[in-house]
Amino acid sequence: MPFLCECCWMRILEKRSPQPGRDETLVACIRRVNLDAMTGKSEYTIKGHLGRTRRILAFNAKFGKTPTIEPRGPLPPMDLMGMGVALDMIMYSLVAVGRNEGVIQYESLRQIRSTATRNYDSSPKGVTEMACFSVGKGRVRPTRCPTQSEFFSLFGKGCEYRMGSESKANKEVSIRVIVDLLRRVKRDIAATEYKSEKNELSKFGAFITMCTAASLRGCEGFLADLAGLIRHLDRGRRGVIPAKLKDNFDEDVAESLPHVVIALLGKVKGETGEDTHQIALANTTKSGIEVRWWIEELVRVAREEGRRSGPAFAYSNGKLASSSEYNAIFLKYLKEIQEQTDLIEDKIEVNESFGISRTLRKTAQSRTTRAGISAANQAKMNRWRTVENAKGKKPNFEMRDLYAGVLGQMPVTWRYSYAL
Image (cartoon, rainbow, N blue to C red; front, side, top):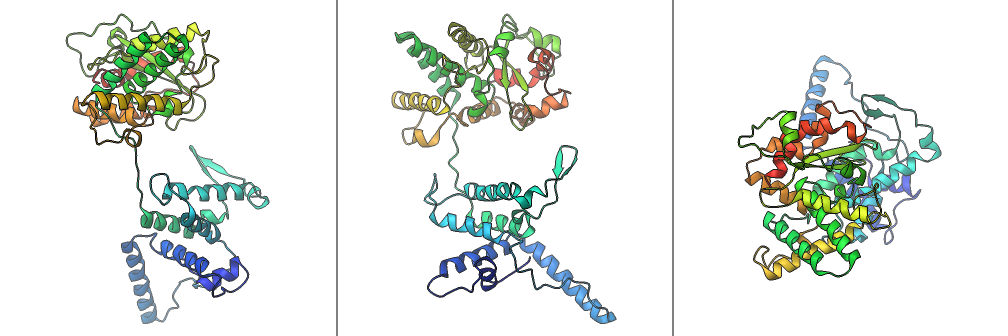
């Protein structure tokens, strides 16, 4: 790796030598960056390069040849390697407070690099480098941006390895908790006298149902498209499950199964462009989650509010619903279940352990694993973009043109949701 000592970096970055009593912390941060960069490559990779270099020097000396090795210095007296941005990251880690722990996590720290890169790209120097060429879906652009240097890449890897990570990701709940939660939501819908409260609870219940049955993250649930739900609402309403259902049934069998189609609009799971995605789910799961009932209730409420298009999960004025509000309602019901049943252990801290972001998806994954759904089919369900691409789906088709593709995915999507 390219190397400059602390004194050299001080002269490059600050145009002066380090001063005792003034620059101890800055010098220590420079040393920290250098040490992180040194550990950015595997020890075995470094030993391999070192061993080969020594062998090259040995046989060159034997045969009287000058070794073909680039001189190790001097390096240009400017920051071409991103030391300045790396120092910003290290110094920020000294003062920032993390969400999960008293210190910041690397995933948050690395955002400084993204900001620095965007600043460079929009500068006069960066603008002159904007020419690029593409191969397939990738984009290649020659650049002298310091944050794209090999040194900075090594620093990032070493820094991440040193810091590690402490994640408090959402945990799963049992499917019985979801069933009980939805039962309680129905109870409260019937009990309240306020129409607006009834409607919001109906939307919330539909959101929990859809995210669980379709194995969606919370952010993806808010992509539900009302026009798409309405367009295909009658399909699969009167379906019947045959006594013997083969694993790989054809589209005719799929169309005869009891199912409901949900439509998601927007950039989902790595897709590009404004595209619509549909997933056919079982009308009712094995555990008793009434998917169709909740979706029809959602559509009924939207029609009552005078909405026919736009976000499915929205307020009466059409504005997208708040994820934080849904999350608060979700946690309220979980606390109620914890206090009144034995479905959630008393020692679990509900606010820190669960959330609509990933709890519903993890719950679905856990349930389908126990139900015998293969890992391959779980991966297809959770990354159905890959499946759709494999079936020849083209972007920017209208929703009604995609229904045939939906039927083709039902051996995965319908079985997955039915197993819940």
